[in-house]
Length: 108
Image (cartoon, rainbow, N blue to C red; front, side):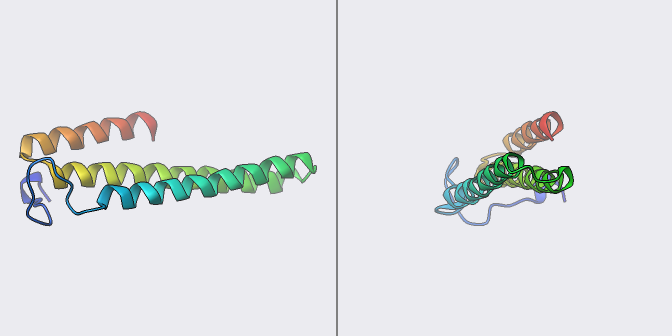
């Protein structure tokens, strides 16, 4: 799919969100994911303090790391979708997608 094929889902003025609450809904999702991860990390601390086996702790660390990756990718996907849906020109859309790509390359 080319950038020129991407059309906003609804009629909107330039710079306006694609749909009411779009950003808020996805921010809430990322925040909820991070809060779950926070609970996982607290559980990890308890596991280490309780002297749980290295394998048990490693398994839970892996789960927390994967959850962080999923939260990161959700945040990035939201950023790209917002850039595409709120852009007033193909050039602006391309720049925003390119910016998101650089962030992914740097931090993913």
